Length: 249
Ligand code: PEP
Image 1 (spheres, rainbow, N blue to C red):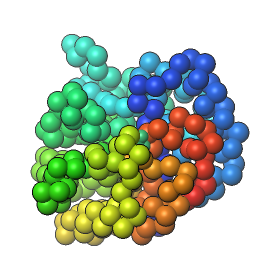
Image 2 (image 1 turned 90 degrees about the horizontal axis):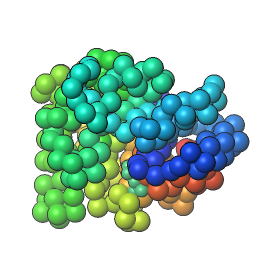
Image 3 (image 1 turned 120 degrees about the vertical axis):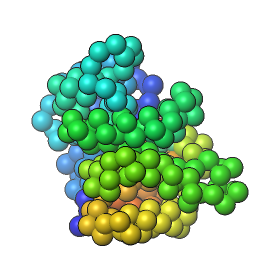
Image 4 (image 1 turned 180 degrees about the vertical axis):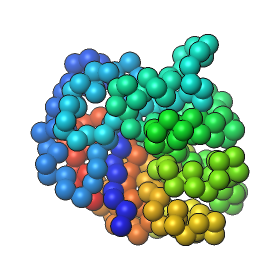
């Protein structure tokens, strides 16, 4: 049985005071979230502070990226060992904003993925198609290509060590959500693609949906058989909304 994970991607939002309010609000309602694990991925500069604020509440912690190298002359990057020092269990890798705004290729994303796994940090591995790609009928090819970049370099078992986040680019931050049927269809496609290589990996890997998931649409999305949680952007910045998504599981 796959456990539900609700992870908040705070992107480049927050301040010292707002993150205190946010974590305290989540902690206040956490006991009512009984069927999901909750995690937050703050901007890098706040990871240390959020680690302190979280304490032993059980909220998971993740970064928004991770370097593909262990240490050295890589200005602006975050070493896996640094993330581990601050209890980051997860690292978002391959988010569409990193791919489209900062030019991260499938190859680089796969290298970051490898370093995360090697260091014991769980990749929150983001994949998903643009609207143009969906409308031109190549959605499955795109998602396959993104996954194959990891499988071809690290093997199918590496996928068993990550959490996949299917995030259709057209649904991220737009207020347009994939319908539960649309999301389920892609999640099922991903799982069947993995099953062709390993039934075991396919059965155990968590596949989250991301793209304008909110308190109003979470229940229906999370009730789909192949949707194992959510990667939440905007709605993760308000404790009540984030908790409501967790309670929908
Ligand atoms: C995201 O950035 O991963 C995301 C899903 O954002 P939003 O929920 O705001 O669409």
